[in-house]
Image (tube, rainbow, N blue to C red; front, side, top):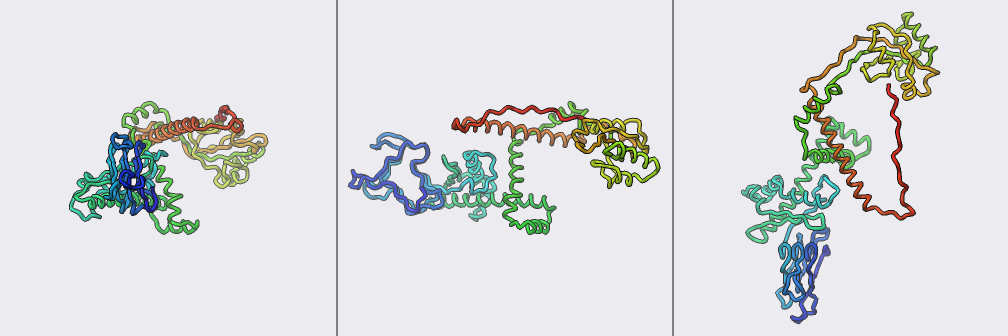
Amino acid sequence: MGAATVNVGGARAADGGLGLGNLISGNGAEGIRIGGSRSTPYRSVVAGNYIGTNASGTAAIGNDAEGVLLLKADDTQIGTGKPGEGNLISGNGASGLRIAAVVTAFGLGLIRESNDPTRDVQTAARLVTSVDVARKAVSKLDTERSPRSLLADVKAVPIAQSNLVAVTAKGATPESAQNLANVFGESVVEDRTEKLHAQLDDAIKQSFNGSQEKYQEYIKKYGLTDEEVREFLVRPSVVQKKVQDKLTGDQKISDADVQKYYDENKDKPPISTPDTRDVQFILTGSRADALAAEKALSDGEDWDKVAKRYAIPPGPPSTGGDFTATKGQLETNFGNAVFGDLATGDVSGLIPVSEAYESSNLSGKCKPDCFFIVKPKSDVKPGGQQSFDDVKAQIRQTLEQTQVLDKARTKFNSLLAAQKKLTHYNPAYKPAATTAASSGAAPTT
């Protein structure tokens, strides 16, 4: 109930009243909950009701949670002292009456760990009773008690079927207990806000190298406010980090896992590194251009000038095609020439481009054939096998990323399967069944 004034019941007829009392029993949560919405009730009265019993008050038909739960509902009166306006509260699954402070999962600015509201509110309840929040409460109360001593007197419980957390406390008086609960409710909101802003500040610093001046120039250039940057540009990266931490949190990559990967993949990157060689190359779009370029080079013309006159992309005319060639990652004929018998400083003959490379990379550029001309600038730099210590950090990162992707894929598939069970189509609008399209392998070079 969220109205400003709530009256539940009234004097029973047997006691001379109008018989307005209610039988409130057998509910799946609380019998009566007042408060916890945007408009806080005040001057409310609960009177003349049987809560958690049968109609005669002689047997229990309990509500699953509290009989009456008051969530920061000030000035609420339970019973009036007048004949017939007392309440019979008995047989309920939790307290007959609980008075609590209240916080919401949304109000804590939670970075969501799931799409499950129940899990979110449980997370919120744990945050309320954290040591960091207790330290803030100690400061607010100006008490000599330790944070853990205060925590022993405070309880935070998710409220069924809501995004609310009820915060209750023990104290020497009802007033002191209520004050302690309220302070914890305020402190957890402050603590979460501070931590979230600190994470966002760190993300902004990383994006702009710690320069507040660059950051201000950026938001001014694009007409953004600081709040918009935090909400739409920075917060998603913080969320992504939280999600990744959540996915990897319960299963760490062990040193044994890293060593096993190293032992089983010694012939693959990053453990094994291939041979490399620095070269210059010119790629021409016709035999005529290739022959003209070859003659110009043999006549002693400058390589860059010849390249500018005859080369086509991806042999950049402006650089003459400077390139570090990696063995096993090249167009077939190009690779055979570079890592064959061609000496450093010598100019190759015309090297025809393979059909596979032409069809996948040079469609429409060859008239009718393309050719490479290559000049090695250095000797071959032999590859080798890196030591375990050199690559273990990189291997661990690779395994963690694979783990995240596998878990994300499994979670996505389970959610998709669950959604399919819940989705029912009108026969006229049911989409046609689809089959996976076959895909041919890309041409290898």
